[in-house]
Length: 328
Image 1 (tube, rainbow, N blue to C red):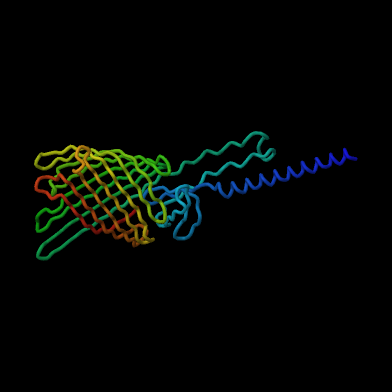
Image 2: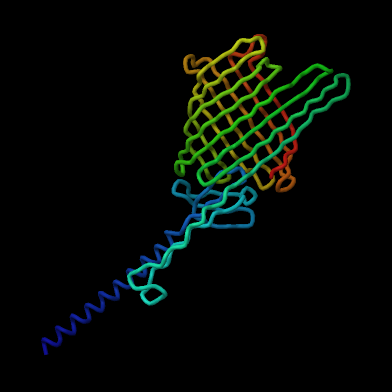
């Protein structure tokens, strides 16, 4: 009798252990499904990528959470497309369409398609009174993004006359390539060229690599900081030339104020490597009011400062522009 009672006790204990193990496996599975949800990547219209787990999704915005930010709000108007998470293969069960101990072959992963985006801005400032003034401005920007790579081509031109005298004749073109190393850091390279007849710059060009950091990506506010080197050469209309090396410190802001109103800003500071008190400075901000999803009214402020301009040219160049933009 004692032997039978001991045997029954061992059976009961084994059953209790089995039930506890089953409950533990079930809890682990539930926790994995709750906390191990796949991340989704959103491709924005400006080519940026935001990756995170969806907290909530509404008609006009999507709220994400990431390892570095508790909450990121992405306006729906700024989303070009989304990349769904990669589907995980279900575990193989013996007798359920696969041989026991062997997994079913996985389907080839489909790479996300690339993204092309662009914008054209056209502006004019006309005055026919005591002083006759005509100023025409144009700008074209094209963005190509694929996975962690982003390339931005920017072309800017202005031409104008005041009382028949040339008052504006400038052109600038640039190409900037960014490559994300992770969620935070990225590397970049910039190449640019142009001229400005009024400021007596016959030709100028620059080239420089660097590293960037996604400092803030939350609540409709995106801030990147960049640091690198920059070589700039300017040839003036009097045949003088400067060939200088600079450090480059930059701040880039993208701020969707609402579904209709957006603002972006870029500040670049170039202290000279050999003489820190000699520098160049660029500031640009654009405020856009979207009449439609691809049509906007724009106000642009550009400020250029150079401690070593051409002879008889002021150090500061401030430009105010209004234009109509078309995004494609």
